[in-house]
Length: 238
Ligand code: C5P
Image (cartoon, rainbow, N blue to C red):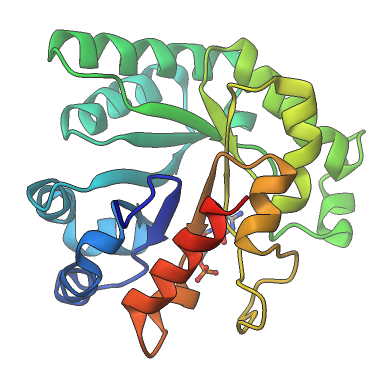
């Protein structure tokens, strides 16, 4: 098999046409895509429908946070679309996460489908120490990430989104089966773009990641299929 389900390619586009073009070009080399707010707000469920028709897995990255009832009901709708992974903000609290997990399970069971994985955003990786200080949390960022990951686990979630640098501590705290989905991945020698705390694909898995999210190193590459295949080969070698 050429593809690897541990590689998730970010479809960061504002039109469905651009997303379709990339998915068709990558063909069998990529099996899992992330649809974020940009594409979802532009193309809505048509983006999900297209990916499902192509036989792809979909991580719908909408980072929900609201009162528990609203998040649970919204996640039921997103589960019914046939998505494979969804996420919420851990700072929405234990009750919000537990009700979210229950809604996802129940909706999938009603539809006789495997439940999508539900993961939590802990602390956004764009947060730096200066902005963190303004928020007046008691803990250092790294400790807050691990406590929120543990809270997500206790609330019945399947895992977290995290930077590759945080993966090791989360893996240690949350055990071998917890999903750790890491963006901020750059093959050796690739442009960093606006990412700063990066790891290589193999480095991310060595740190404990279960999946990596890769955008521009594939989507902006001259030869996109070759870029995807090189990453698959690298992670298979870990
Ligand atoms: O192009 P690049 O590989 O940097 O894309 C990374 C993707 O992961 C983007 O969709 C970005 O929004 C997302 N992401 C991130 N850092 C986070 C959470 C999500 O880079 N902490």
